[in-house]
Length: 188
Image 1 (cartoon, rainbow, N blue to C red):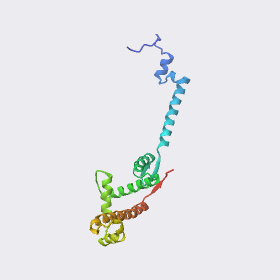
Image 2 (image 1 turned 90 degrees about the horizontal axis):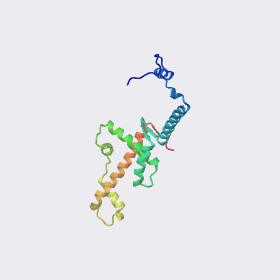
Image 3 (image 1 turned 30 degrees about the vertical axis):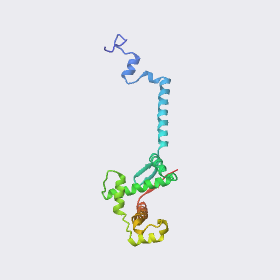
Image 4 (image 1 turned 90 degrees about the vertical axis):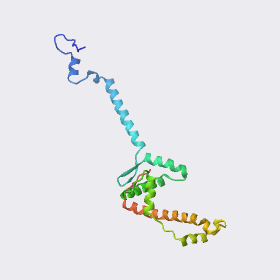
């Protein structure tokens, strides 16, 4: 049904003229203005709460770690080690970023980050455990092996010494990576 004007002579009513010019007379009522102001204030308040809940707690060069990411990793970590601190978790997240970045430079590809980390460590961090070191360890701690012969515990000792050496080499490697990177932590 076509729009009919209430004015017979072809003149438009005041409201019709305002609508044609793009003005709506109802927007000028105090209630409408109040409603619009309340809507914008609510929207701004919601945005400010969102900003407060999540913020950047650390930068590693151009990579940011947010509080929500830290809290997620921390909640998983505390299940394994109840004594771990958020700062320790944040430092491990930073170390992980640095190592993954180095692994990508070597073009290491795997389906999961854990696989990339393992591959990187096996390529870059190679401990050299000598047979004499394993034997020396056995002799030094022979009482701890409850009378077991050297050959029965040799692999266990070698594995322990390898892990210990990997941790030491990895710590040194990470320290060097951290020296080269821009790292800023803002944990409150």
